[in-house]
Amino acid sequence: MLVTGRPVRWLAPVSDRLGRIGPVICSNGAVTYDLASDEVIEENPMSGRLLFAAKDLIAEIDPHATFAAETFDHLHLEEHFIEDSLFFEEDRRKAAGVTEDQLAFGPLDETLQRSTLTQHRHISDRVLKLLVKSQAMDPDDFLMQVRHRVGHLVSVTHSAPGVSLLELSAQGVNKAAALRRFAAAQGIGQDEVIAFGDMPNDIEMLQWAGRSWAVGSAHPMARSAADHTAPGCDDDGVAQVIEQLLGHRARG
Image (spheres, rainbow, N blue to C red):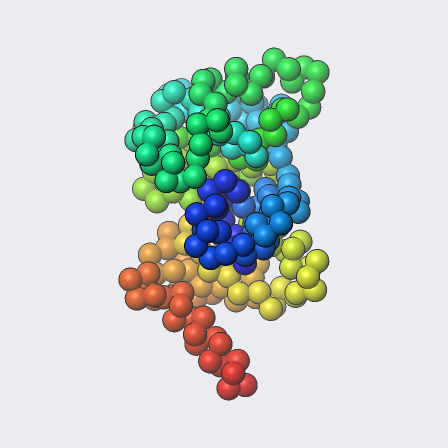
């Protein structure tokens, strides 16, 4: 099963390549989606009030931080957030499966209609993930400071190598929580789950799974969370582990 930080819209190229593969866990566990039937199985959007409370506190850590927000229907982007990103170039956006009608440019306070939160708890365009980027801070330091400051409000993680880009979700949302619920619904026990990962957004899943491997190029935090380390990507490390596991199962 694919368990990814990417939103549903980014999985179209994967689905085209692999076929309509059925349920996937997206947006770091905020959504479980069936690619075969194009149906939402489960979703956990963020509270609008907590989203903007976290945004304000992060702005105190880095006043020049820029923000974006992922929803089912749109990608909300502040002006400077798109600099040096794939969304800045039209051909790269198209390659990622992002269409023009899915983009909403401008300050999040405006595009997400912060003023309406006095009447409604949730934003009408349900936010699954808040993104924040810093040009001034080291990625791991930024993660630690933001977690310390807003971790009581939202879940905070990081998955972009070498980029100070954080991903915020509703409190308690992570890959492990979504995978645990899905596995239980299928009658699959924790000890039967094997997981692979490489970044801090995989930590909870790597710790929860019955057995887990960090890939060879993994972030140190992911390596520490996993039971084992697979060979590197250039050596098809994940494939090697899977072949060994299946070979052992066949012999057993």
